[in-house]
Every structure is written in structure tokens, then in C-alpha cells.
Length: 266
Image (cartoon, rainbow, N blue to C red; front, side, top):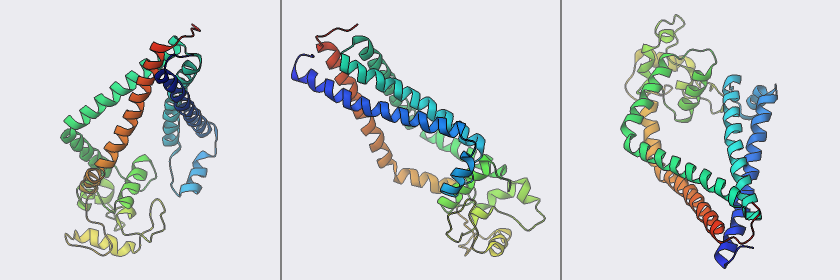
């Protein structure tokens, strides 16, 4: 067995932590495989969450979940088995993987802090692009914008007038000037939402009112979204720091166990 109270404590903590990590990885893989293999997944999600998600978006998310789950499963397996067997090889692989993850997270944090202004510009550009390409046909763009506009009660990137640059709405002959998700809804939580008074909303959009309206959401999503991110930045930073602390402790425990082990299985 490992020598010293520190090494013994590290061994048991590593076993518990990585066993849970291993289980989480297996769950992610299982959910991802279910989403890929089940032909009824699209309709099931629509019934479960009242959200119409295209199949290609579901498959992309499923493959990402499988990839992340596989990595978690592998790292958790190496850490758990390495701690049980006090295997230098498995502990070494675990230490290397955790070091790569921590360095990646640190690099990402520094990049976001340094490039915050440029990232906000890219976000605004992306929102403007999606607004200009929005149509009433259900696709990935319409679903993401409908959700964003309904969730944050906004319309367009900078304002509802951004839809004037959208050919579909600019050339519309049906007196439709903004999507239904730009109108105040009935609170049914449907996607796309059901407008409370679609006619009045479209009239207000046609008149391009700059004052507060009764049915049209005039504020843009970009300023509301950036304000929301700023307001919740402390929570996001706290969550990231908490995860990083756990990962660093796991790395320290693995190094401590690797240096003080007495039984060799390699």
C-alpha cells in the first residue's frame, strides 16, 4: 500500500473522484449513442421540451457528447484503476491528461480575457448574419434565434430594424416584418412562440416605432445578451474556478500517490 497518510488519503480520494468521473463519462456516451441510434429522438425531444430541433443539430450534439464522454470515461478509468492498483503507467496517463485539460482551460480563459472586445464583435456579427438569413422555414438558424428572442425578450441584433436587411421580410407581401418570436407571446413556452397579438405586432414593426410598444419587442438581443453575461460573469467564473480547483487537486493527489506508492504492478 501507499506510504504515509497523505498518500493513503490521496489514493482513496482519487478512487472516489475518478469513479464518479468514469460513471459520468459512461452516462454521456450512453445518451449520445441513444440520440444517434433512436430514429424517434427528434419527435421525442419535441414532446419533452416543446422545442423543434432539426435532426442534424441533434446528431452534432450527440457526437460531441460521445467524444466528451469517451474522454471522461478514459481519464476516469485511468485515474480510478491507477489509484486502486497504484500503477505508475495509469497514473502517468491520468496526470498527463489532467495537465493537458488544465493548460487548455487556462489558455482559453486568458484568450477570452484578452480578446473580449473582439469576441463581442464576432458575436454581434454572428447575430446580424443570422437575422439577415432568417426565414419562416424551420432550420437551425430560426430555432436558435426564436429561442434567443423569446428567452431574452428581444428582437434582432441591435434592434428590430435589423430585419429590414432581411430579403424575406423586406420583400414580404403578407404584411410580415418581423418573426413571431419578436412579438410578445401568450406565455405558452412554445418554439416558435405564439404571439399575443400578431397583427398589432406587425403593424408596430411596419411603423418602425422607436418608443415602447405594446406588442413588439424593440430592444436588440446583442446588448441584452452582453449585459446578461456581464451580470452572471461572477457565477460563470466561480464555476470555472471550482472545476479547475478540483482538477488541480486531482492532479496533486495523483502525483503524491505516484511518488509514494510501494506496490508495483507495472
